[in-house]
Amino acid sequence: MSVEKEKKSAKAEQKTEQNEEQLIDPELLEILACPKCKGDIFLDKKRKGLVCNNCRLLYKIEDGIPIMLIDEAIQI
Ligand SMILES: [Zn+2]
Image 1 (cartoon, protein in one colour):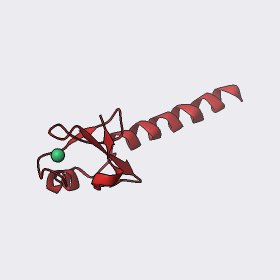
Image 2 (cartoon, protein in one colour):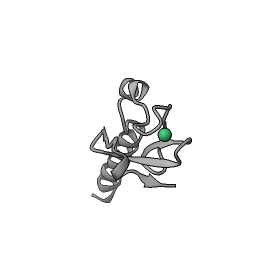
Image 3 (cartoon, protein in one colour):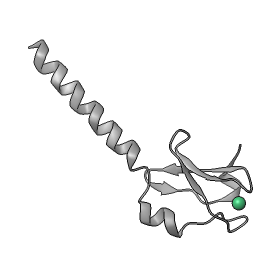
């Protein structure tokens, strides 16, 4: 019984990892630019958002959709 339970939790962990890998569609990331400076943005997996190094802003990703609004961005 307990063995089966362990297997299940291992599977769940794998799924979580995959979700983190695919925070955002890579093709979508390529066409996105910072709304403030129109410069390139980078995926920050740790912060789960997109970072503009010029503006030092973090744009959050919610449910795979980046919130590309200057007002919503977080200063970093
Ligand atoms: Zn910028």
